Length: 339
Image (cartoon, rainbow, N blue to C red; front, side, top):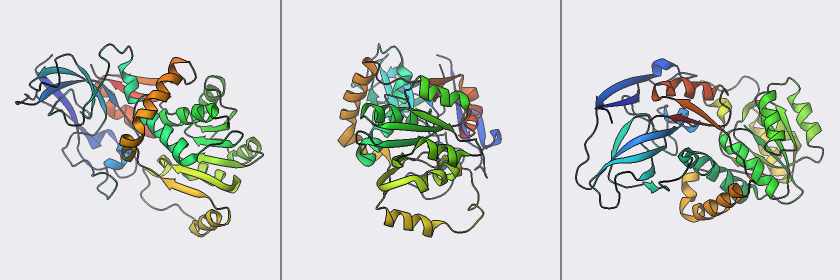
């Protein structure tokens, strides 16, 4: 332990893409736990697209990060000091320390982890919120059936890679959309997708149509934008669209140019009886998390689900890594190894 707590706070709200100037690195004394509290030291910090929305001062499913407040984020932490009988020094726990070295907690919301787990960061990825998001969104909303065609955007990301592999386990034909030839090769050769389309290609629509000769039954939406435009004409009657994110428009400051396409979308949903449903994973922990842990633990142990991490060393590099993620530069689940 040092005597200093480093933390990144929100210095200003971004207009468009975030910049390093939107974050400020501060140093302060390590907080001291009171009776009933524990001092947590951050080992790993998760960086996720949802954080971009929390930087805006706009209504959403969760309150925004306030100016001069520590940036939000899921963390794997170690108990450094305990004045809470439920936790011992050395315990490994899942928490929401955010972008900082240390935090104090009264124990609310902390989840115990196996102190001897060889890869604690997996609790932020395939065995954590992203994996759980893929599990619930695909199985509960997408309802894939053997022989159906499933398309997933951001196919090699933390959520998309799990979606595609679970769909394969359910007997589906899986088509990914990812950013770049290397990611597409990984989706096919390592994750077992049937095909993967580079979203940067000028003929994205034509390539996707060729890869889906029988149309699309389930589209797992992470991106929006041009990818959704390519998917929409290929949707089958009774197709299902779990809406997890829309990263293509997270940094937009205005509506896209062109005519209002909402009537065409609504007409397509009506005529083809398509189910399009957004979901927030925090609503499902009580009812589905235990099933997820059981299934995903088994799939990983049997080698049926693979994962990839993009690990950045050092808290000081979190802003640059976060901005890079919004530009598609990460490859796999993005985590910061803090200590």
